[in-house]
Length: 636
Image 1 (cartoon, one colour):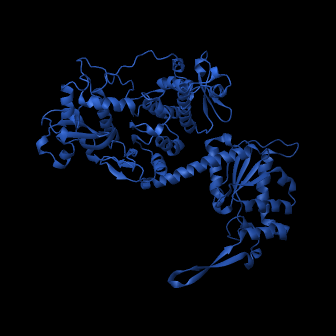
Image 2: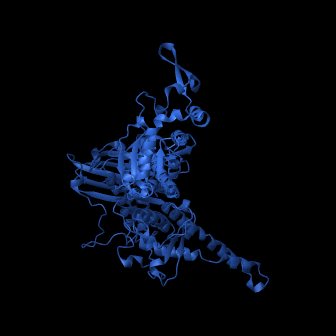
Image 3: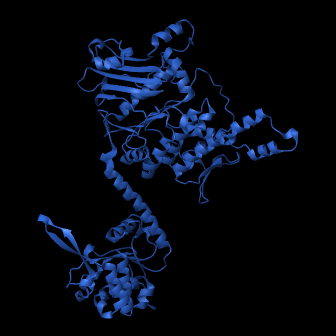
């Protein structure tokens, strides 16, 4: 069953919103992402879909809601005249679902609305619902074959205890995954209460009744049910098939398995895929491609189900996942559990699970990488499930478009329900790319510093290091050179130097301000003079700029070299097209070739006279942390 059409009018902040969800060429539903600012009606939109599912389910199952004091089944979404859009006399909500060839309808009307005078265009689509009274509130679900099924029902040809709607819904909801995960969803952390660690390992003793769904539609927390179910899955997958195969190949006729038993075992073996599917979700969530679940002995319930990581570390139980990881893992394992409720094969063939899953604020509590990369991948595991979700996260939208393609999902902007693309969020994609690069950069810097035992000098580029090393050698400062680790920031990438320059040094500075544990060794960030960086000292981190040669304005460290060294042979005169058709000469400085000549070929100490200012900075830095013998370190 899928949502085919929804029409909302004058409800909450929504004036008119008419949406027809999209389907691909294989008639599989495209994911629907509802976006918009706070107060635009995203939760209102989702609430009607959930209310329709609740009303449908109540027609077939008795465990959907508890009876109220009057013996009636209460609505999930109450009809409140106060929810009518300000200044309007009514609100109207119409939904159309398709279950194979059957149509199912939902209607809620509040306020005053004459059905005879309403717009013919909408009326023609939802005609079966068009029989309310002008005054008062109204809510109803029915099927497009209401009259035919009612006649069968009255004739006793179908279950007299189930309405015509219930007759259709009974099979759909038993076989599919239908669930609403509200924004208030949560999973109790391991520290909250010791009882959260207890898992009932016994065989379920509650009998299944045909009048009960036993799959709550509103799922606020599901870890307890899931953990017991996961242990069942692991038990099913624990058969030793090597023994079975040896029995099949044995020489003793008494050990051979019959063809019937072989078929049974072969079907049972497929349930190992169920475990693999669960562990695939786990690996994505913890971002460890070798993570796996390991059941332990029942005498230690706190560690009954351990997560083994690739680096040898263990997470003691599923409850020890972070809030975001736990929510994400249990949300998608619940879809599998619901989908296989009456057919275990569905836990093997996830692509065949059908249903409607509504998720409010799908990206809440999630790290940016989980929003952008992992969530879309997990959604894609269930192509026949209609996901209808809301989100404020541009990163999630960009990840969905990357995973499904620009035509592979519907992004609806409320309150009007207009279809939009993620292009308007492209700037967030650039920000996320920067964020990921920043995380990687910080990790690389930490690894680099961890291997160094000397005070560190970081420069904007590789040529700075070559000039400084040459200057120390030419000026007789070999001891100073050997006492420092002089390195350029950044590294070589596909497009040349990456993460270098003043921006790279700024990142290290910002990391240190955020987390001083990043810098274990004394470090000097040495900027070029034209970066305009003021001197600064934060604990063991120094910030200095190479002094400017007052007689020259050349950029970079080359400013310290005599001007007569910059011969014409070190410039390429490139012709560029100028204005009015006139070309202009744009000289390009051969920096690497020039540096090679100065540092490796010419090697004249007189060229490095201005570098004595840099040497003085390095000496001050070095002596602060490695003073000459017999002297005490300068106090910080």
